[in-house]
Length: 224
Image (cartoon, rainbow, N blue to C red):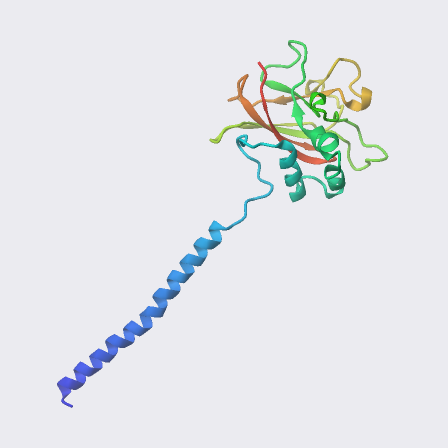
């Protein structure tokens, strides 16, 4: 074999070797990219996520039961919310509604809320200070967060209630008047701040926490 033939033969081997080495690398990169994409696409949704807008098939009882089992409600309350009267006596008891109050009872920029609408067959939510059966904490809503039910960015306002009945009379009203602690505190009306972008007739999301029984979410319309 001449020197010219030998150089031609070696160059042909070099080209083949490069092709053999590069092929597995290209295949490996493609496989890694596919795996990362597939993993991201099948990531499960957050079971504790709260919707910004009211779903067309919204069922607050079903939603709060499922979210409760994901950690929003204490495990000790599961037998009650899953029981035969779980919807009316326990989950419904923790859903907000707007009571009918006298004109001028609610300051501008606020909304009045109660829990457990009796017109829907729900038990009325009691309120209580710590007692023998609930020594660690009382039974009231310690915070309420309200947001306009819109898909875009929106202001969220949170109202805190560090104690009940407390000394801050501006935080509560009494439905029908009288002593706020009467009838097991069931006549307690919470005054919650509205975001600045909310107007009468707007749909808002109410997300609130009961000290004893966890978080609950629902949507309602701000009254005129």
